[in-house]
Length: 328
Image 1 (cartoon, rainbow, N blue to C red):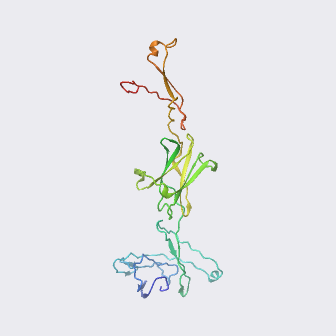
Image 2 (image 1 turned 30 degrees about the horizontal axis):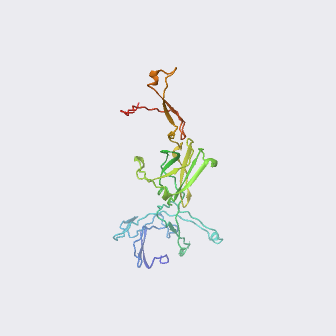
Image 3 (image 1 turned 180 degrees about the vertical axis):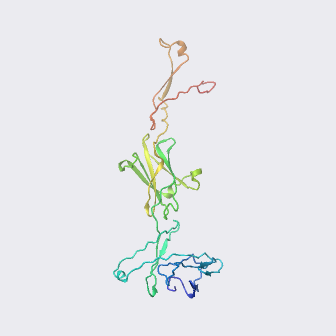
């Protein structure tokens, strides 16, 4: 034990009881608070037929094993009681001499993305005499490309027929797969399968897309972001999707809701000079004096742009000019 890094001086006492072997290990010099610990049972000797081991690391919780009750009665301690299952890898000497690399996969490692240190790993070689000094620790944090935002909504922009706005939620642990999301990739296309010749994309820094939007009842606790997609063709359908990215790469894409949208707006304003005119009717062979004295002819040119949508009708309003502004 003293050969391990930063252990300091230790004293070990061994007591053998029926069904139980007790190792009392006391750290004499390095006495700082220790985390929860456990026994790695790759090569534990002597073998226990019951396949159970118990570790008590400055813990007040008793360690019950068989008929024995092992207690660590120290105040201000951490729980350290643990039962483990034995696993073993048998390696023949003839294999270890030819330079073959051995592998062992450590599964189910979970660590929040805000912890950057990762996991420490070291290896010791063992034989009938025990384990040798372990290698220097290696540190690495397992991670993967993140999941896409859980909420992705697209909408038209008021008074801007060439733009749409994308609202989407941030991606945090565990959906970020252990590595903080650094940005987003947004793609838009005029084809549903996002054919390269009809698609556009942009990469955004996660810090540059924050939104003042508050979460709805169904999205309590979620932080929203937004991005404007501009310079689109009014009246043309666009499909939109988004993916999150971190140090491990770009994750899968998620489509917007709705999956497509057509940018556009109300028709543009009439030309102030020639857009709309009114004239009195002149009495003639086709128009009576009564009709000419009680009618006005309204003429107009279509607006310069329909802003993406066909103009299907016009609204004409009139009212009494001098006394009452009542719209008819």
